[in-house]
Amino acid sequence: MAASGVESRFNSHPSRAGEMKRSAENTNSRDPIPHPLDLTHRISQRAYELFEARGREHGHDREDWLQAEAEILCSFEASSSMQEARAAEQHAASVA
Image 1 (cartoon, rainbow, N blue to C red):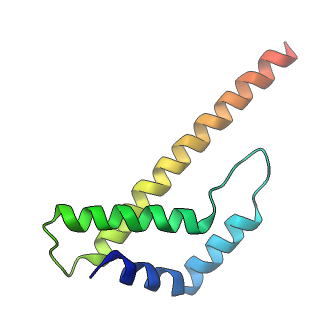
Image 2: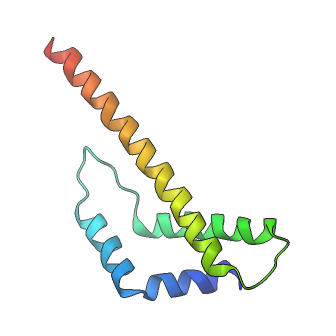
């Protein structure tokens, strides 16, 4: 199945939709959170890359989506942690 079918199932999942909505609501200027549709698009693209890497073998759409989701979210969390560390260093330098 193409990533778009997986994407539509993901978007219709109530708990995921709620999580994405809460994430968007918790955005503040210090902690930039990508728009949920941007994350969904990036996950969809990565899931499709995994599908193609497998030789376009159907039947692994859920696995591809979950792997892509884990990779993208892990990458986002790592970059957020780096941003927080830089902000803490800058704050410590300005206080000292």
